Length: 288
Image 1 (cartoon, rainbow, N blue to C red):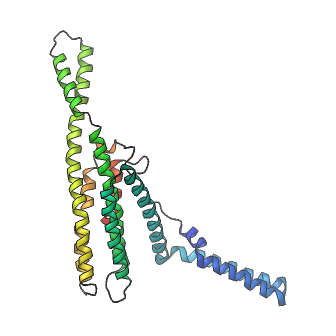
Image 2: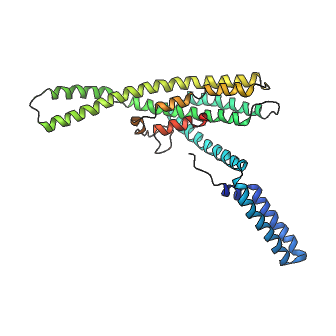
Image 3: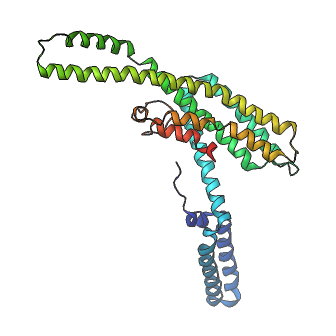
């Protein structure tokens, strides 16, 4: 989701650059009235030289690159939000959607506060919180996927198969080939049971995060609203935001081989993404 944008392409497509080119065309037309083709050619050469010089300079400027990166980040965030909302809606989790809506309303209010020149709250700070709302949707999608995995789990069946295989292995007259196959199957079923238990533990941690995350964000909102013009806003906000980085800790719980190999069909995660990738996406915005 973090492909590097083309800064040169962004410059060429920038509205200001397009307006400048259009203005050059207009100037060239007016210049051609008294001077003919010579006037048009002169304006064209000057415009082309200016365009080349700007194309060599502006795309490498840190401020321009930051602007392009920010715009791309916002577009990708909007796409991911829409995808996650669609997937969660398909699962019918209205509670998660209502919680997200409440968090989004808080972020909108904070954007309005940040627009006040008297406050030390910046739009960059609020952007982190908006990223967090999408991260919340990502964690909700992962939780729904784990729930689906649990509902479809066959731990009881695996336990019965384990008992059956252990009984068969007690037969001393089994051929070596059958013993090897039964022991291999026993190892597989044992891993199924262990994986189900690990998934249950990780799901408990994820559910705790989903409960705590909206409350912690509400704390940030109350902090800003009660003292929007405080000179210590930056330090207090950073301290509060650090508490919101619990998504990173939860994401690390999913960075395991058995979870990385499991690709849910309907989890609000891009096609081909793994649990590990989903976790990293859920933590990416709050890691800064």
